[in-house]
Length: 313
Image (cartoon, rainbow, N blue to C red; front, side):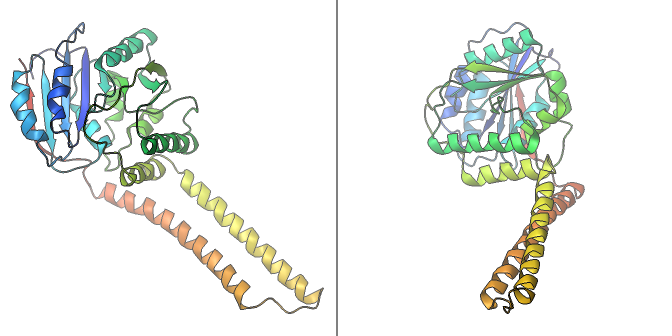
């Protein structure tokens, strides 16, 4: 692309967006951004009409658009990482395709980042218009991030955020197959700001926020950006050892002091089950780390691109 780099890039992952593509593209039509802007759309393996809608509608847009079709569904964070790598703006705003975050609020994020000289500005809401399940999932994700990643408790991690160019260049250096953008951000900078923004009702369609995706996100957080699970496993192993030692002492005292024979089969099987289960749990944690390290060294791709196009009016 020979055109000058714009001041602002918008990165939007698409997943079964369908008819919402037209609404999404129209939302960027009448923006005024000093230095210009561009939109990067990443189709994350949607098998509906999302791609065909892009191909039909993008050529009529009066602003630069890059659209990328991934070879299959790799997840939101991998799709956003692909979009970040293709962005050229001095600042980059990431947002979802449901437009629950108005584009006008994205401009406020951009301006707040410039004013405060932050490297990333996260949005937060006075009242979220998501479903109860998604709100609970977000709350638990933020709770885990505080424990495992050392996230400040007053920081709300959200997909609606504004990055500086230098931060984007740093976090996109990660090429492993298990991306977690917020983990990369917390590792790469402490110049973090927040901004209260408006949150709208979802216009149409259904959220792709599922329990399976949440669990996959949590596992990326646990095993790729923290060794806290190993420390918890070590602590759990210590507790089991102390419990076993206490039971052994109780058995000896029971036999020699109170002259009672050791307790029977039920208590023995319960103890064996407890310790065996603890050992298997710790082995599972170690196996997850080893497996992910193997897949990373084996070169499992973060994402693969089937096609990429650029429209520059």
